[in-house]
Structure formats: C-alpha cells, structure tokens
Image (cartoon, rainbow, N blue to C red; front, side, top):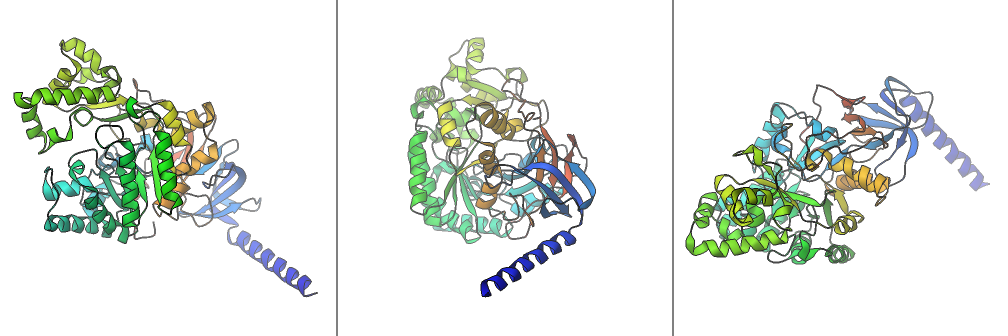
Length: 529
C-alpha cells in the first residue's frame, strides 16, 4: 500500500512539473519545429521542437500547443548546436571592419572561435577584446594568451633560458591575460621564439593558466622528424598537462612527412596511456592532408632564425653558413615531400606566384628549389600550403573520441591569395567527406567533436548542446547539400548547406542569406557567457 501511495504521489508530481513546464513556455519568441535534432552528445538524431526566448533555449520537446513569434519549419533538416572552432587564426580578420562579419565561418556553421593559437597573437587580452568589439563580431570569440608573444615581449628572439626575473615577467603577463578573461595558454614550440623555450618554462606558465581554470593548447615542437620527433613532442604536451594540472591539447594533430607516416598509431597509444592514468589530454584536427605555414618556418632551421628576420637574412648571405643552411633546408624540403608538394599561397611581392608549386618556380628561375626558396624569402617570406600527410593517419586520428574539430584557418578578403581551403571549408568537409562520402565516422560523432566536446574542454558549459538552459547558438543544415566548395586551386568559395545560424538566439544566417546585424560576443572565462 505504501508503495502504491508513493507511486501515485510521484506520478502526480511529475504531471504537475510537466504541466508547469508547458504552461511556462506555451509561447516563445522562436520555435524550431520538425527538425532532426543532433543534441551534441554524440547521440543519433531524434525529432524534437526547440523553443527559444531571448538568448536561451527554454524548451525541447514535442507540443502542438506552443506558439511563437516566429516559427522555423526544419522539416527534412538537421538541428545542431553551433560549431566551436578551437584553433582559429581569424582574430585579426574579425577585428577589422571589413571582415568582422565572419561570413566564411558562419557559412560552415561556426558560432565560436578560439583565437591567438600557436603561441601567436596579442598578449594584451583586454586591448584585443576592445579591438574586436569596436566594429562588432559576427560570431563569438574566445582568446588564448600566446606563449610565443609573451616570450618575445620579455626576451626578444634570444635562444636561451629566461632569468628568474624574466620568468616572473612572463608569468605576470599570463596572469594578467587570464584575469582579463582568456581561456588558456597557447604555444607554438615549432616556431621561434617558442622553440627556444624548454618545457619547464612552459610548465611554469601553464600553472598560471591552470589557476584560472584554463587549458594548454600547443603546436608541438616537432610534428615530423625535424629534431626531437613527433612522439617526444606529444609527450611534452602530456607532461605539461600532468605537471600543471590542466587539460592539454595537441593542436592540429598530424604525422607530417614521409618519415613519420604511420606514427598516428603510436601517438594514439601515447594519448590513451596518459588518459588511462588520469591525465586530461585531447587534440584537435582539420580534415585535410595538407598543412599551411610560412616557407621560412617550413625550411629554415630554428638556429638560423634566432634574432629575427634581420639576422636571418644576414645568415642567408654569409658564405660561412650558407652551405650548412642549404643542406638543412634540403633535408626539410625532403621531409615535406619535395618541391612539387609546396604551393605558394600568399606572396605580395609577386601575386602571379600564388598558386604555383615550388618546383615550377624553380624551373622558371633556373635554380634549385632551395635556392629558389632563398630568393623568395629574401624579398618576403611567402605563406605556403604543404602537402605532407598520409590519409590513413588523418583517418586514424579522426576516429578518436578525444579529437575536436578545428580549422587552423584565417579570415582574409575574398580573392586575396591562393590560401588553404580550410579557411572556408573545414567543418563542412568533415561532414560531407568523412561522414557522408567515406563513412569514416558517423554524424553524431562528428557533431560531438564540433560542439559538446570542445565546450566541455574549454568550460563553455552553457554552449555545445541542445537542451533547456543552453545559450541558443544553433545551426540548421541540409545534410544532402552540406559541402565544402573551396579547393586548393580555387579556395575562395563559401561552404554550402547551412540554412540557418543563430548566435545567442538571433539570426546571423536565415534561409541561406546573411543578416547584416552582428550578434557575436567576446567571451570571458570568468563570466556567464
């Protein structure tokens, strides 16, 4: 009898709560109906309607009684949390008046980007926030404190350990950035001056970020076999995460060059072992087998870049050093598959070179590929696209549950350069190619890597899922039409298939057309966003 009474009371309470929830939200501002909801958790889609008031999701369910100021019929379409790009070079573009809209990103379904990756960008987090807010932003922006810029501010381009005073200055800059709302510390230990830092320096700075609930994201010291090697470099991220007690992220994870093709299996094993003993390690990845960097970073050894561009140029004409430099540059070129696998993407000195391969330019110049590279670099360091990965490694990494999706892309004026297509197509490509075409991963898994997983890692707890109480960063897309149109030869093409994008409950993209008003925000790690 007692059990019967308990059941009756429980059922009555549940009915009351249900009725209250329906009556509370019998009318909403926006109602998305009849869509296939991918909630961000990795689950498969289910049918549900979504009610939005102001900037929040207030109701998810099925009810014919709910009315709305505006109803979006999502029949035949998929509804997902907005995508979070955890490694973006779009910061400078978003701070400009002409690109603050971020439309190439919105067209991929991206609603939040993490800027200042690879240890580069502004160390003045508050000042950068003001610059971003000056013209408004079309999507949300979160900031890293960049280690390389911090080091450069204190020590210049010197290849040495910091003094105790210099280390304290660097820690102070990181702390100030974290207090001003940054979400963690980024490093680029492949690039100078970050390459001159030992891991103890990075751990000391990461401990500062950890105090403020930050993460550590690293372009690792060696993605290939340039010096310490791929496995050692992944181990460094694990060491920082373990010692500083914060999440560690291997940025744009890859096995770069023929010398490490197949090493993805060992990297996966390394990360899995670390996670098994309680170290919080993740990685992000863009869905291409080609990377992008500067020609000098790709070919010129770090010792020759010490002191900055002026000193590098002096070494390039020093007969005592030139032969050694050329030998190392030739080895680095071989690592990247040779001159035929290096494409010039941006070179303002001569725009006609953009889109050409280094071997083509070498023939034009009548010089060896390395000599041609030196000629180009002396005028201006070109940006390049480097075709250097094996598809089997790309796929193996993509299947891991700790992999987040990223673009590593920037935001440039339409038609400017022959840039990497990841600027325009990363998120769309992962769905169109690796979900729909090759069936490498399923749709729910892909969406999780773009939504709830990065939201969890970066403590964006009110984003990344479709559920009541979450901020209404939402996209609606046509799975049959979602497609990256950008190619390596013709990159300046917006992705297709995203029909609606809501930023904080406001339409940034509606029925496939961009809205003029900008609704993004610069997020703060210490505030409700």
